[in-house]
Structures are given as C-alpha cells and as structure tokens.
Length: 315
Image (cartoon, rainbow, N blue to C red):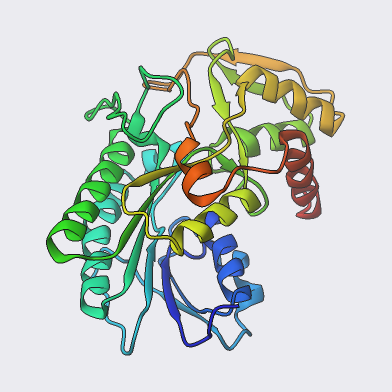
C-alpha cells in the first residue's frame, strides 16, 4: 500500500471514470483531492467517499486559476465532457478545459514539482485510416466538424503536456482512453451502452445509426482503472492506448443487450451522425509490454453488471 502521505489531485473526479479512479486511489492509501465543477460530474458518484478522512472534494472549474496550499505529489487531469451529447452541448467549455484546463493543471504540477497524467482519448485518431490504431498514428480528424471541439481539445492537451515535459522536465503521462463502460454512466450521456440499456429496459426501440456495421471495442471500467493505476506509477511519458482490443459491431452490441435484458425491443436504424468513426480498435501492444496489462472482463460479463446497476437505480 502506498504511503498516505502522498497526495493526489484529480480533476473531473466526480465523473464516470474519475470517480472509479478515486475509489482505487483511496484504497491504495493516497490522500485524494477531487476537483470538479459538476457540469457533467455527479456528487452521487463520490458521496460514499466524503466521510473518508483521506478524501476531499473541491468544486472548481479548472479553466480558472487553481490555488492549493501544501504539497501535491500527483496531478491527474481527467476533467472534460466526454460524450457526443456533452461536447455538442458544451463545445466551448470542452475546448477550454482541454486547453486552459490543461495549461492550469500543468502549471500546478510545475509549481508543486508533481507528477502529471493527462486523460486523453481515442478521439485523437478521428475516423482512422489505420486499423487497429497504434500510438504512432497521427489520426484523421476534421478540425472544424461538430466533434472537432473534443478531438482538437485533446490533441492540444497532448501537445502542451509533451511541451511541458520537454521544456520544464515535468514527469508526465498521457493515456488515450478507448470506449469504456460500466456502473455510474449517465443514462443521458449519449454513449451507446447506456443508450441501449435504457431503451431495452424501457422496451423502447434500440437506435442504431447507419447499418450498425461500425465497430467499437468496449473496456469495462475496472479493467481501465487497473491500467490507469499502473500507468500512473510507471515512467512512461509517450502516449499510451488503454482499451479492449476485442472488436464488435454496434449491431452485435444491440442484439447482446436485447438478449441480456430479455426485452421486447426491436432495432431501428437512423442516419449516421457527422464524422462518426467507422472503426475504432486500440493496438495495446505497448500496454501489454510496458505495463503487463490487458483487459480481463468479457463484454457479456461487464454488460450484465452494468445492466444490473441501472436496474438498481430504478431504471
């Protein structure tokens, strides 16, 4: 167990991924300072931690100056809208948290002489022309498209993180997170897993865009958190993919959800959204080699756990 004297600031800590990472970090013995402006985060995700003496919540927008007294050992920048619905509703906020927010958190890490981790995304690859996507692929992104606010915010965040690493010698890590699902996802966040679960549990038609042949790889939240923790403790400075390499079509996911929920729902098809990637699959050979990490939870197992969680929420 890590000494409780080590202190971590995690931005976006009340979000889906951030809150699960807070759980892991507190269990490992860190003191965790969770910072979130709650634009897409939820206090319910961290309410169980509020009585923990090694956990502190600060409501703050990281695009504003961050002032913290005392030592910080790690700064983990996870703040950002992260679903199509969110970053289409909040495009300017998304750009600001990726640019100003990353600048502010890097500045804090510099002042505190802290280690830094950026939560980036597979969206930096855009609609990829190389499949699966390795970390040295530069991507195929429409910078002025409706998704560009998220894609380019994260690409800038990666660029300034590496600049601070090279110029100021900040001890940085960059994780490119691929599709992740699990408990604490918001029903209305626009991502395919909660959409399908909600529609199935309500016996509504499952909305599939295009012909449903576009592919995604789904990593369960516990597997992702394990990878994040290993990367945080590593000395890897270049971007690293974390996600499941097991590829499924959206249509396959729809039928599996229907099967697991025993719903009467049918599938309806609608036009593909602008710039929706046709394929998305991580090459995780670097994570396997450097972190000795690969996902353990099968899609059926993780999806069933997620469905049960949504049922327990009264859905």
